[in-house]
Length: 241
Length: 333
Image 1 (cartoon, each protein chain N blue to C red):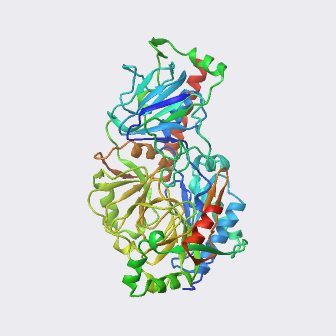
Image 2: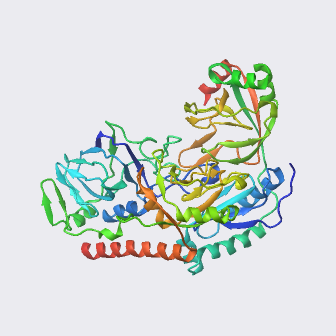
């Protein structure tokens, strides 16, 4: 899974308000690093009319306001103007992100009322609940991208033995901080929301903070480790936040 | 003091032009579904166009004004009534403290927008007043209005109110309004439905020619499970088998996604920042308000457009809004 990124990305129009720069089509850390480096470059040097930059697994989506782009470039063809500007900017983007990736430890209280589906995951995998916890917390995960909810990290690296299909009908309410497994993915719900993943535990950590500013505890490129804690530590950490 | 909610309606949320610039953190844009009506309503009461309005969907609320206000209602005609009298839409209206504003069911369209001069006094969250129901932040307490809520208003400057009161010709009990309104053809939806204009999507080429032709030939029905996240359509299924191996990437409002079942979904204001279904087409920006005004059960068709047409339509909308702005300025002189 160490597929290399294309040297120059393929650019696609996504309608009249966005462009997609595709660096590859495989799930691969090197490709993702190129995407992150490009996004970092654009966020630091915003293009006129650009409204959002979304680095995903292997492609970068750049949103823009066509009227602002047209006004800036004095053109009636904002998509072409933006495509040219983006191509030019991406050619100058570094191959690797400047931001130093971190390893983030997320304490998780597994099982019981904190993770109602731990038994389901254990049963499907043929492992004991303890083994599931050990496998899940014994792995280092790579953060590909944020999406789904503010601060929700798409993690790569779930042990194949823990792959568990999503629930047949999603829960109406998944508590904030819930750690789940959905298919071959695992992650933490930063907010209370409906959700279809198997819940195996919960973290007392607040993953996304905002008031005027927004801050995600986990960012793309980071590594994540889950640290098994007991209910008492869960309470203590909850009280501290 | 503010507007007391005596009945909340089906889904009444505070919205503005959305929360941009944070999609890289997974923060969705949200904001008014029908941008044109939202902007028009703000314009008519002298607000900045990104000021928050109340978006009222499908079934209307009953609102009790605890203070005087200058308001405007644009968008779907939900038969708004003030103390039992019809409230004229698409123009500023001066209402006195104590009036009750009642919305019914939409006769045409799906969503009405209520703007109040100086705006609703709700806090900015991450640079926007838009409600994110999923995530429960922004707008009024991060949720749709409920019975008993009091939606606080900011106080307009007296000079502003005085200028607006100068516009009012008709007095009707405890409310007054001018004898003009924004003309009907500027409404963002059509009595005779015209096809939604689309541009080829990111995965257009991955779909066989027959499927692309089918998309523009077929009639689709808006499903009952359509909401602010997405409009689920039903019609002839689109076979996307060959294009299913796509990784999630950043999505745009108006993207026409094709999930494995083949029934397309149009992503709307509350859509997630990323998505993993192939995108066969994208509805042009100017036609998003048209989608927003479609209700479950309505039918729609797609028509392939060009980037040039899309840009010309965007310019035309700005010119319409500019005409209203200028006409208002002349009347306020």
